[in-house]
Length: 67
Image (cartoon, rainbow, N blue to C red; front, side, top):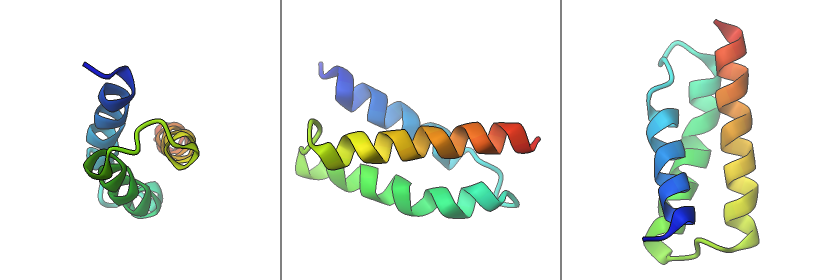
């Protein structure tokens, strides 16, 4: 099992759960789609994957602070 894949899949699942009313849900949709493509193309250890992970966690944090 790949830890990076697990982390990406967990982040994608959490981003999907953001309230549709949230500004951050809309922002996160592009990151979520890009992360899914990273998994599909098996580019798990790429610099792009690392950047998208950071951005996704940033959106989760901001959405949590919004509540």
